[in-house]
Image (cartoon, rainbow, N blue to C red):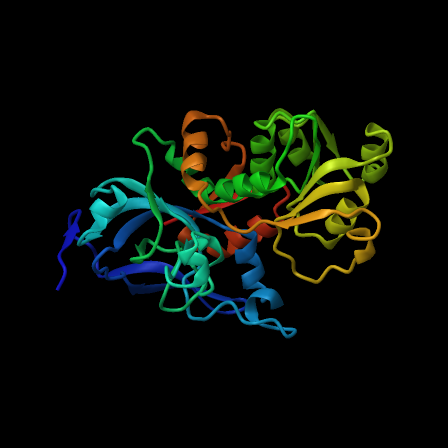
Length: 367
């Protein structure tokens, strides 16, 4: 039996939100996870609610396997992948492996790679064929909507600096994703860049893209308060599709050609069509969205008309250290992005605010 170091006494039971089915999330008392060799137990400090969590709650076909889609989720499972927490137990070898000690604050990448498939063996672990992600797979990777969370043996964990602003802990995961999307865009100094969708991800993409020093950085959203925040966080120009023809505006600003780079993070099919119309020939389109419904477009735009470079972006490969650094030193500002905090017992209200709250950007559950 492997040795486990603990920070004081660990309770046997904890409060957790458990997902049983679409619309059936329950606050329950469950067993605190037991850890083994190479594993870590965190006392959760907070966990953000992702758009993927609200779509899971409503039974999005892409996640639950409807409309011919393969099922991604298995239940019952504790949701939540945007978490941080304090190390309260270390399995044998875990401290040395991750550079952690009892009492440290830590985060874990959302994916738990298998380490055996062709992608993992090639260092492309974020595309792991097994693809276990916290909060989606029963019995494998329970998430952070709980008082405690187990970090499995193949998890990728990071210590937060001692002076890290812990309130920003739930933003490490979204910022890591945002950094990856911007890196996929391969922004050059003379590029005219458009970020569409100014939620949690889009505002992180905006600030990261600003670091690339493009010639023009445009932010698009339907919510005036998000546009105001984007302006303060580095956008050269903000546009609201409800108030003007944003495609024509961008073309007017580029001598009729269109933007060089379009990064889409709204999850709206209209945003896809908008981007394909707005981007110039030979431009780079980056997609980072979770959609509720399919998007129908004229694919001849991509090939025959514009010969576009279409790039997907998924998760946050190799970007957590940079995300932690940017938040720790203030390069990326997230105080106004994390807009709401709710106790675990109010998870239903928190989910509603995350999805429909006019002023909400990132909503966090606090055990």
